[in-house]
Length: 333
Image 1 (cartoon, rainbow, N blue to C red):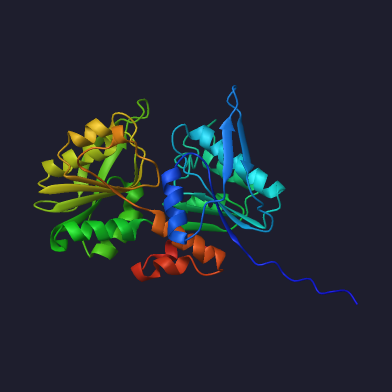
Image 2 (cartoon, one colour):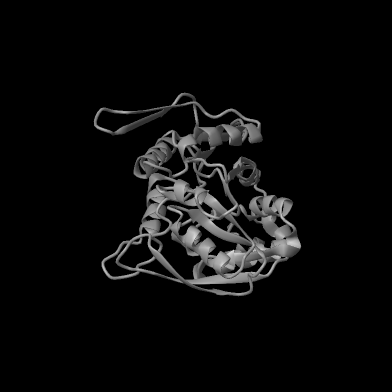
């Protein structure tokens, strides 16, 4: 009579690329585990080599890499890590991308343009990813680009709690910097119990990163305006928005955003503006030379660790956000 096979115990593996090691260490600490040791280096011609220094067979692997500068290098490294896990017989591979690269290229604005956000999802799938986890996508439709479960996490509770602790809630008006951010801003109004204002703007299609602000829809006079966005890149949109708010009588402007890309000249623009506080998370690494006095950086690690644990234990990622009444916007198939 043949012996019954004993099922192997499921084990959690957290692996990190080289783009944001500080965040990976914090996530591992929150999970109470050690990072799986990885050897990674560049060859002379720029090709990347990756090898795991211990067995990953049968593991529930989470590959953490935030897409920061040089963005194409770190995306490629993550793809190579996924391929290595697949070939080393990991049982399940979840791609953890706190900041999803190419998210702004989510549709064709004109002919002969790519949909690079969809290409990213296809690359992850082809490399061997079973699941995708990310924070505050530029647009929710990107969730549909990946053929598999997507856990879309929100930094709103973290950011909103910090804002609420700084300002009298009765004086706050939540401001969407453009029409595309209105749904995000509406969730903020629900959490903070504050009114909403919208800045109507128009971009110059021939000049990248240049914005001409037109008008404010809503009452901001003598209000503490909290401008909310998913990312801050060069800071042009945010600074012009703040100038318009002050012109319309705002008493104070605070900026809250999940992803601090902070490309030049963002640091100088924000520091020299009338904005009082810029509150972000550490989904992307923020080097010392890009930090400034008005900047507050909140840790996203506890949120990522909780979501990873929910996936590992077959729990519910959606449930993490239901108390804030916007769980319906979370995808966790």
